[in-house]
Image 1 (cartoon, helix red, strand yellow):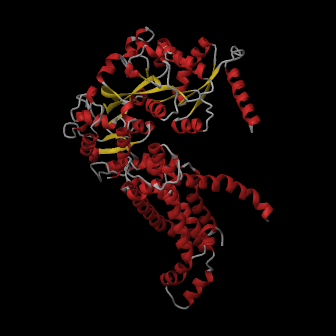
Image 2 (cartoon, rainbow over the protein chains, first blue to last red):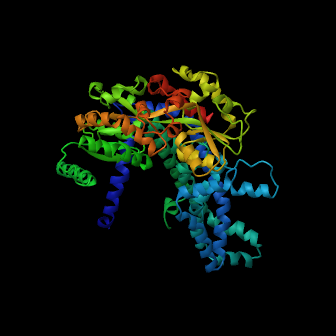
Image 3 (spheres, rainbow over the protein chains, first blue to last red):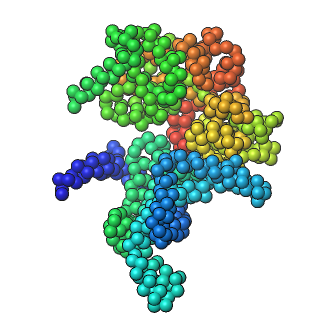
Length: 270
Length: 350
């Protein structure tokens, strides 16, 4: 077994662990040991604002993705096979399109002269175009769209494993459909909810292209600070300190979540 | 390790020779030249690089990278750079010179550079081409009485409409000061406090702070904004596509990329020879025939190669240049300039 996984482990070691370790090392070592990069991250309010905004956006995206994704997964789970395949493919289809292309597609939909504003003006519902993009709103919309599959798939996988007999048992005992849903189905699907939410939240923390293209320059997420710090300070240390703090917050989130459910459920098939 | 490296270098040299079709097969001298790729590097190849290689009898190997600065740092830091000459925003040459990453130039060996105005060169670099951050506007929104200076751009009552600026302090702080009444030739050292104060005024009216040239072109092309700061080449490209957009050179901020040589470049002597040849007025005059950038050497306008109607479109044409502010890269790479650059991030997030 070890012989079989060792090439993969080696690749991970060489291409992920070592470079990340080296970057982390640079954040504390530049012509001698220094905590300057971390002092900056923790004292200058630019960083604080960016971290706060990133967590706010991630939270909003996670909640919206859950509200949209749960009914979708539920529908896919309860409809006959053909329909569920159709629904899942519709969820997955955009997944195979480049993030960049989807960001531009949202631009075409949301901008002042975009499809949505033109349509609303045609219907005379608005007199001035709405500011739908170049702000946090546009960023959230596009990010939800990109991350929705990461919510739907774990939810669907979990729902698939809930035996139908349980709902029938509930009904035979006289419970209404909504009561069986809330007392039986929903609690049993919670691990999927947690798994989906964790995936979406953590992936969203590191988003770069979407806020860069749709945020109008105001929506500065942490990943953008990373790239900006390379430019601004001309050394990787200043940027990797930001990345290290973000990585540690992600690990902290995983740790907290792991107290509630086993990590295997979040990461794999169990 | 050593062997593979040598093989790699040999491979590169062979490729270079092949690229020149064998005519320069016996040329011992070669350099590696680096620019930013795309249509821009292609234009240089036709106008400057190929003719220079032919005239000097050398081989020019090309490489390209969007932002050369991190690579300059790592290459020189490793003690064995593989590039010789880079074409990069002038600020990089100056910063690099101060940090010992860029060779100091001996202008006695670079007569073409020595003949250029002093503002167009530094101890480490010579101007290679010019572009300008200009005030661009939609002719649909402003069929007549278009905004014509930065004070107009700041005047949201007289010129209502959506606006965009670049998400970067370069040129933006200069524009703010000109809007506040500072003359284009009296900008430096920049009054940073005054510039940011003026920017706070316009900030609520800025729809987009763009980050890439492509984005600025898209905004103008789609009518997403009515006026913006943009690079002249981007605006004229959009106009060529048929969009009703235009721009003024009035109070534009004239910016340049320069040529400089990496410290410890493998082919230093040939690199210096090439650098002199690359700013030759005739080669330089050929560049704007290929692409919408102005020559770095103003003598190019005296060669007769650039027709007057073409010259009038170029940012560094003397009459156009006179209307603009020449960006001081020396100021931007000074401690005050670097502090202003860092302050930008907190301004954006407030």
